[in-house]
Every structure is written in structure tokens, then in C-alpha cells.
Length: 572
Image (cartoon, rainbow, N blue to C red):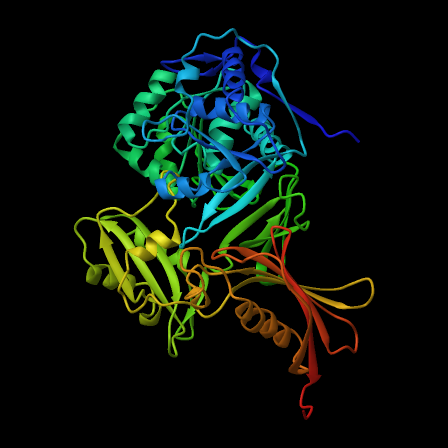
């Protein structure tokens, strides 16, 4: 069967607007601009990528099409920090960088965008199985973790979103999130390009700027995040006229905020997803707490309520259903209740507490604008400590602690609380664990963790009768075993992989195994970086004392081998 082909921006026709507002641009001119930029790029090679850093969403769109015309994938950074951009630009497979700023020394595309050009009429054709983009995310240490996307994943999802929410010709999308972020990429750029809608070029953050941009471009769709939407409370009821869709993603949208946003004429829609999965569910938070899966997707509950996702937009090499780092309870056909992440519930001093519940209580306090909570490993009987940071002006840590004690046992209240004028959220509205922990530098509660995050376990029998254990494992950024192993680019030492992960999980799975007596066929194929999510597969044949293992990341092998054990209690 031939691979389906996507054609961008075919839905507009040559004269249809792709960019609205003060500097409108037609689809024909966009195609001409992308062709001119493509002529500046080096020849494509297997795995080659073009780094795109553009604040203007139209410049970003032109660069995407240019890279794809020239046969490259695009590399999209985790943020706009100069250090992160420079590190990505230095990667050997990144062949060029396209940008629209004054402080970069690579290919500035603004002169090309301003050049008189004859319009093109033929859309760019892209096969569905082609590697189209790599989204680079970053952990505490700044190690870049790639999330590769095919055209079928990105453009297929963009088209599906447009159909699901009835977005099309006549709509104009204003996104407050950067274009290189997965949510801003899909909702703010690719969805309009795929369905005949237009996008606005900027990504305004502050309420007055959002209102001005929406009015100038006659926006009918707003794609934003809770941190930005909270700021719109200062606008009058007619401050955002003409909106018929308001989307939110990145964190749960508070129902009270959703009700407040209705005054702008649209019932906000909360979208649930991740870089790896794309958006897979939606809800109206002002009306109900249940999520509805997107068309063509199904969810089920694995062990401990782990969310298992079957979607046409998950990675082609991922298991189906794909284990996710979320918990849920299925409430009916395509409907479920989201119960937080697998690593959301922690034990402190023997008492269980959900980090998301602490965050919700903090945000509900009078005078608190925003809050962030994290758990870290700790020495002693408590095992785990909780840290909380709140954004407020007229509160202190003691007042915050007193309020939390109304709801939680003393052991469950965060050990360290910081009150700050502004939390370090990026342009996407998200706050990384690294940035949150940076507020607690020097606190005795911030210590390296000794345990991996085991997010899901699946048990099954292989066709040959062997018992299989498959575990989803997240490697914490603050794992103690990274210390001393290449501080600039930390990697997980082989001994930590074997002793603290593979060996411990094998012994936990099969208590009849005794002491380890040999290692065979051992190979380490790929470094493991902080923050990566791994799949560990353990396989044991009936009656055997050998356990074969394989560690993979996004389908790529990291290490594998076979552990040979004595029987439990056997003399050596």
C-alpha cells in the first residue's frame, strides 16, 4: 500500500490567507518564500535536520516548509535559551539554523521574506512515513532528549484536530505559546495550515497584548495555557470579542477559571497530551471532570491504573497500546477520569499524598497566583521530601504552611516552602523540575535520589512459554548515580544500570533467584541521559535461572545481556 501524502497548504488555494493581521500573507506567497529559503540550505543527507528558531509564526511556517522542501527534518529546541540553542546547533546532524533575530550568526530569513517573489501554486507534498521533526526536550541537566515525529503523526494529528473541533476556512488562530512547542506547533501552525484557517504571527503573553492581537487579527480561536489564561482575568467581558474556541493545555485548567473565561463567548476546552503522544483527550472543565478521547483513539487501564493509549499518532515503533506516565479510571465508552501521573503519588513518613492535590490546595489559597510542587529523595525514615514554591506578594512560608495543615497531616506538608514574586515558567507556560528545584538551592531537602521511577509493569507469557516482565522506567534528573559521571553531559554508568535497575528488578520479579554468578552477551549500545523514559524487558524461560534483559529508549537499544543466577539459598 502506498504511503498517504500530505499537501500543504492545499486547503487555502494560492490566494487564501495563511497569515492574518497587520501583515497578511497568502498561501501562494508562503510557498514562494519557502522555496527561496530552501535554496539557501545545504543538500539533505540521511538524518539531517535544520534548526528553526523564529519568534514570528509566519517566518517559522516558511522555514518548516523550506526544510521539508529541501529533504531535511526540522529540529525544534526545548526553549529559546541561547545555551540550549547553541548546543543543538553544534550537533553534527544539524546542518543549518534558520532564525529571525538580530543576535544570531546563522541564516536570517527576514531578508528572504521581504523579497519580491512570484507566488507559487503547487503545495509541498510530504509522505506520511517521512521523519518530519524532532522535538528536543530538556531535563535538569540540560541534556537534550529527542522526540521524533513523522508526517503521519504531526500532520495527521493537525488534520484530525481541525475536524474534531470544526476549525477551517474563515477561522484565525491566536496562540500564546511558542511555535516550536508541540502544542503551539500543532494548534498554532500546523492545524491552520492543514485546514484552510489563518494564524496570527505573534505569541503575546500579557492580557492587554493578547486582546490587542485578537482584535487586530479578528481571532476566532485562542490556544493558550493556564498560566497565560489566568492573566486574562483583568480584561473586561468584551475584552476578547469574536472567540468561538478557547483551548488550554500543558496543565489541568481550573474549573473556576474555565467558568470565568466563558464570558468571552466560548466554553474553554482542556486538551490532554504530551510530546510523545500528541493530544489524545479533551474535556470542558467548566462542566465536568471527565475526559473524552479524541476520535480514533482508545484508552484502557493497566496495572495500578496506568493509562494505556492506542492511537494512530503515537510513535510507529512504540507498543500498542502504549504505556503512558498517567493514571486513570475508565468511566465509560471513550470517557475516563485522570488521576494524575504515576509518579504523582508519593509516600512521606509512611503516608501517601498526591503532589497534584497539594498544588491545587496552594493555588486555591487567597493571595496565591501560582504554585509548583516536587518530591525529592531524602535520607532517613521519611524516604521522600516535598518541596513547594508559591507565587504571591503578601504571604510568607509560615502562613502557607498553616493553611496546608488544615488539609494535610504534618508529615504530608512540604518540608521546604518558598514564596517568590514569579515562578520560572517558560514561554509554553510550563515549569521544568530543574527550574523549580533551582529555587531551593542550598536546602537540605534537595538531595540526589537513589531510586528509579517505575511507572508501570506488564506481565505476560511469550509464545515459547517464557515469562516476560515489561517495565516503564523514568530516570530521575537528580539521580545520585549521575554525580561524577561526566558533569557537562551526564550519563548513567553501566554499573548503575545493572545493579540498581536490572538486577534489583529481576530479583523483585522472581524471588527464587539467588546470587548473581555470571553476566553474558553484555553490550552497552547507547548512553542513558537524565530524564529519559526507558522500557526494561526481562525474560525468563520456564525452569531457567537465566534472565535476559534489554533496555530501550524510544525503540533504540541502550543495553542488553543475560544474568545468570544461583538458586535462592544455594551454597556457593
